[in-house]
Amino acid sequence: MAELATIARPYAEALYQVAAKHDVKAWGLQLDALAQVAGAPELLAFADHPKATAEQVYAVTAQTAKLDLAEGVQNFLRTVIANGRLSALPAVVQQFHVLANAAAGVADALIYSAYPLDAAQLADVMVSLEKRFARKLDAQVVVEPSLIGGIRVVVGDEVLDTSVKYRLERMKVALTA
Image (tube, rainbow, N blue to C red):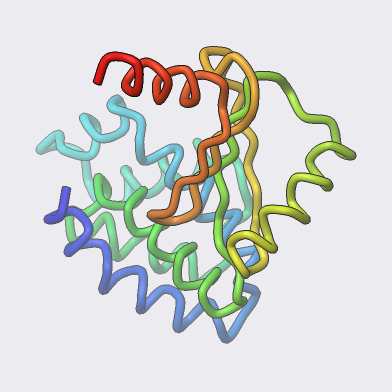
């Protein structure tokens, strides 16, 4: 996986430098759609086929994304395809978002919850989490019933686990030690 990150980093940095001169948020949304499309095994198989041209791969990718791509995003996609790096596109987009968030002073937060959170609950949780992590957070909530109750939050390489499952596991370790 480190190899993919190494490949993705220069693309993400160059992409962010160009996007910073335009609309980073709009580009980010377009790139998210392209990353989702590029993650499809069928598209990667098509792109690797010896008879598929770079322009054909571009056309299929752009049409599947179902978005009107900005000219800079189109050029980026053509470059990635021409260099045979379509499989690295999701990693490039992930690193692009890390750079964009760092510039904006925001971090991505992945919140795992045993139950769906309504808007008011999420707002309350976000106030506490932003104090705890000392930065503005962009949250994405994932429902994970195996947590039993509580939440587990992942921000970068930091994890805050207040779930019932985690507490039960800690109690088990303490009792068997």
